Image (cartoon, rainbow, N blue to C red):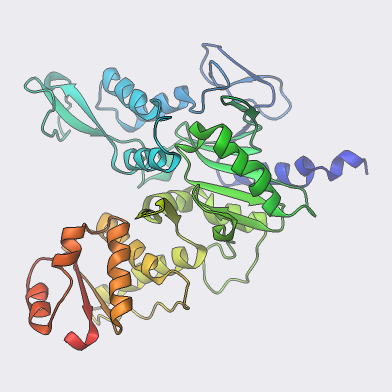
Length: 408
């Protein structure tokens, strides 16, 4: 066998690209990318020559043609001017912001949509308008950036060797996963025998410093050498990059291969669930921290929701036990659970968080506050100070109630 067969590309990158294709992603190599072509983007199969992603320069990190097509498809009721306004809002320069603040701002646009103004005459029957910021004659509507309910309606494109030029350097991440033209996933690979941490220390960290615009849209980062694979958020240090050992069930054999990682977090359905329902931004004195759900939280919360719905259907009210060890992120799991229920399931939900220690009670309530699940005022108002206060809270229409068990 020739020596080139033992390279990172042959041993790790090409199998990863093949797996993305099997997961329903379109794949293309940008090694021979051409720039400035006005023709529609037409990714070509590997080995068929040059390809255009319709970028003008290597400084562009959004595939605007893909983005515009996706927004038009997801918002057929809106006129072209509204689509252009949304494209402009997503792609505007955020270099004056911190990386994590820019990422949070874009995340809110992805999750909640973009408010755009359209003329009254342009509204299609059935489209719900809101109050217009521009006055009479126009209405504000919410433009969808992602179809969270139907993953197949979105555009998933994996680009290998995607070059991006920053202020000083041109960087070329191994794999970049685009959803509707936006770079959500950045993957850096090393050949077997080279620690996966090298991909983080020498590559991903460098990219965040030199081409930060690529990470304004980032959902997750992956570092792997094929056997050891870790995933983390853009604010995580290496110690907070974690393995993904199971794909669908908690009783699966534990494996840490790149295949398990990609099937676990880059499957189109699971990726959208992870981004929509298992992503938090937590405010701290030291700065803004981005948190993404770990493997056990992702599986456990989804199992808990299924169990809760089954208990409601059967009428016995026994949802089961969600068991986690100390230090495994129980508070975040609670936030993930409550926020997904509130977003995805119809109903006037109230969550009663009961603990048996004062410090734990305060810690969990603080987690809900710092992640924005409840405001400071709401957190103080719905924190039971006594048994009498607890009764008042339970009678009221509160989304959350925090209490020590002895107040019952």
